[in-house]
Length: 445
Ligand code: ADP
Image (cartoon, rainbow, N blue to C red; front, side, top):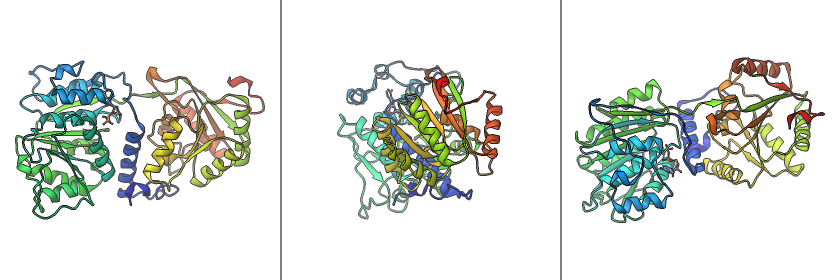
């Protein structure tokens, strides 16, 4: 049973998050974003580069041709629909492909092209004549490892001499096996076993070591230790690469232990803003009244697609039922769903098959559905202490930079408590949230 399914179910409603929940949460979010995302995140920020040797010239490329890739790989890159390197790839690829190999720590938000970059680096460094593992990539979970493996398979489609093997639970090999595949992708525990106990891999022959999703990895102490033990078995000459979507102090400390003498590339997250959003609130007295207000809004304005956030799974389920009875095509995202099921729901919504997505806070945190123009907070976001969750509010309704289309946010207020939350959110962002009279809706269009 995939671990990720526990996410949400355990955390919702009670504040007792365990380390395991936290890790599942991060891993699930990361996987969902990968499953959903079909293209690059647009970013206006510039990369920051810290070179190990500040005197060496810094190369960046504007095309894949400049990289002098093997023709089979260039073909793979174009077959994936990539025309030019992403922001992070512009500098990361020349560094990773340089001779002699350089170590790299790279941080940028998910969807900026990190995976594609290190996959290309691994495929480039392989000698297909040599029938033994030369590149080793560790991912925090089984599902994430499979996902990265798919990218390797896709990009290496025209390079069939290069083979890939998954070092993940369930993949049992006979004792005494010596792997012939040049690339190994897996989770830390199994990879360590294959290197140390079972000796399927000779770590001394590894030329490229990739540690992906470092921030998710370190959420589990065991993974952190295993990763370090793997790293220690590798030769000094091995190229070490580490990637992370976020960069807290803890990630940084871990990264320094994994990657000696690193070059560092950072790309700031695109800031979200409320500037292009019209924010309203509606006063109601009960959830039934909130539902009625919602119907009035639907009757008054044309809503292409909306996302509706509820505090609990119960409310979300109830609301989805009521909306379907009204004839809406509703998608429901719920905590008890497995991560693949959730991805399927979001994907259908993204493709426009459903027009309304009802979800709880926990389920949709950190997930980007870009085309939604209307966001409804059926319940306002609060943290476990009952304080306004400003960050979640911003993430739900905010838009990034100048790419953001105009949007509409409607907040349902049903008590003095929620009025107080609303006021505090308004103060925090210093942006007025207008009162909306749902019996007279001329003003919002
Ligand atoms: P990350 O690892 O940072 O989350 P990915 O490498 O998974 O990012 O890339 C995000 C999405 O963008 C994927 O769908 C990937 O296929 C696509 N992609 C990556 N690099 C490029 C590129 N240079 N041009 C177009 N699309 C790209």
